[in-house]
Image (tube, rainbow, N blue to C red; front, side):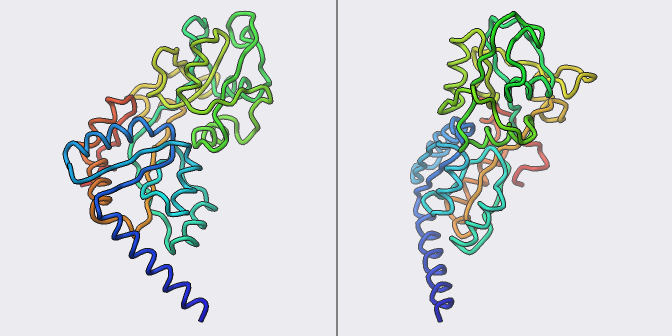
Length: 283
């Protein structure tokens, strides 16, 4: 009997959420990497559809997934894939696996001060710096000066992607300074000639974006649209939106379809990321 009541409660809640999702108000929460693109999409879409109101907030991918499973947001922006535990929590919360949409490509960039003489680093060199094994710029061809490491908070999808794909799961250096967002990392690097940080390509304005080598024998590749799309830049990733399937209808579904359409994708480059390949776009 208890299980039947729980199932009925979930069904009633899902129906209520679906109705609210079609009422013209859409909430978006999550990735700080995606927030400027999400705000651009919302601004343009509301200009095209005056009856739809879209609210966008950041906080990090982890915050977005928590809001999704707590059913306090319609859409979760994420700069990484959902973790198994996050998917399981969503299933427990609203009885379904969240739907995943790829919405853009990003060349995750390594930022240094424009006065830094270093122009390129290998993945191993980057890992050495951010784990604290390499502490002086002269160890990687730069000036004789201590390296200051700037990182994101652990609720950030960019933090988790960087830790998993670049540091191979190793911890960041104990001396790494945690910043509240990618924009804050860039500002810190601009003020600190010995600083280094990482984040989405769209945030790198003013700083120097290093070319990256997959290994010592590989060429150094700059993060550009072509190198990200063809996968030759070693630190590329998809950016995602996750949604409760019960809400993926009405205005929410129309908005998601528009984001992935040619019209929505043309704003991706305006912000500084890269459009989805044609085969991944909504037909």
